[in-house]
Length: 223
Length: 298
Image (cartoon, rainbow over all chains, first blue to last red; front, side, top):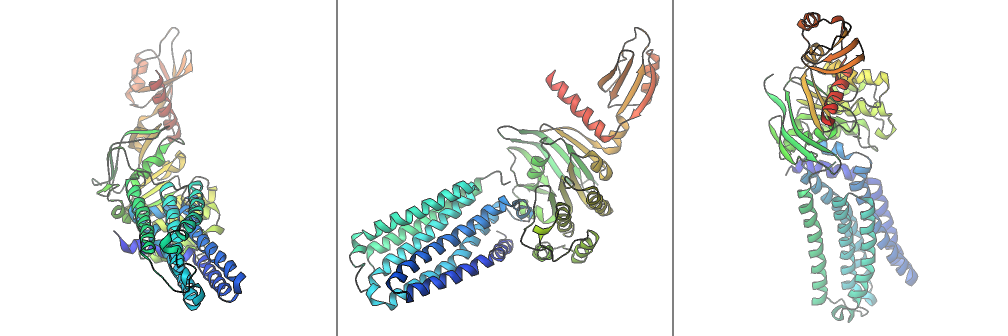
């Protein structure tokens, strides 16, 4: 693996998305402020804004970073550089995650910080962590589908599926007895059910990204 | 000159509606090959296989001593590639592209890159998305040349260029040719461009290589013979005749194995040779393609 080449490609993608990243960070900070200081209505509106911004930055990077290369006909240029397709795939997966994950971490840390600071919603801690990781799963699904299919249609379908899954997973997690029991309480509780949910999500992420590498390594035509 | 920069052996690639069949291609180091074919003939597929961007179904490909596609990353350090459908990153400037590529290529020549920018009248701080098509091709050419590649692969680089930009690009290629270690594969359907810079020519049609040789050999061995036959005379049987045109007693024979002795042979057979016309590369290409297609349908 030519790591310096992979690094160059990742830095290149960061450079092209710097405005979007900064704007999303600013949007995230505003949303967190609305959650913290907006009272009860602000809490709901701010949370919706946060989720929307997280989904948006995931979609924006995947669309611009991965599908954009084919759409803008820059894929031939990128692939004319001294890299293999597996290195290109690595740069895209790591690059997309490196754009999304820091932003996601900041927002998740902010959300958890707000929960910790407000004892009346301590019970939401486990639910929030699981749902935050679910957003990461959705983003990985989008990255995987975009890289494997190279199709805007399929990627949008993956985005819609991810969003729908967010609601379904939210509903299911809120009804898992081990999590639901203390959800509206004033104490932070971490149950075995929460650990299993989280482990399932990380296993899904590993499966999506591992599957993407496997399929990409068997591809025969790249342009 | 004996070392091969590119070697295709029995390469095939099949798609639902097109197939590249049994391609054998050799490009000696230091030579300039013009790769001529109509649109959809298989030029780009061949070049994509050469670059490792498309994997062949059968056969072996070696580029600069590396096996493709397995060793494509190592091979591409020494390859400069420009294709008609290749775009640079629109939001970035040419200067950004140069800075991006400088650490990647060990032989990157910054002074040459800047000199080319001046010669091509390109502004380093202008964003790529603001450039015209001609300027974009010249920018891509600059980035390919400044890495000082051992092999330059150009897939229809002059397509869509205005005459001035075309001459500038071709002129720069001519300059590059002064470097004897440089090997160039230049694909085009424009035979005039290819004729100007190539020393070897390969024709491809419908996924098959139909002819490949030195340019001078092509130009020497292809001729049109304008004959006058005696009343009731028949067209003499000459070697290498691929096409018989004209009419009645005034046939026009196109041969790919012309020798001066043919003229006296015609006279001996009762036909008078009115003229022996040389052929342009375009005429040779068209005759070659027609001949092969007729043979296939016969």
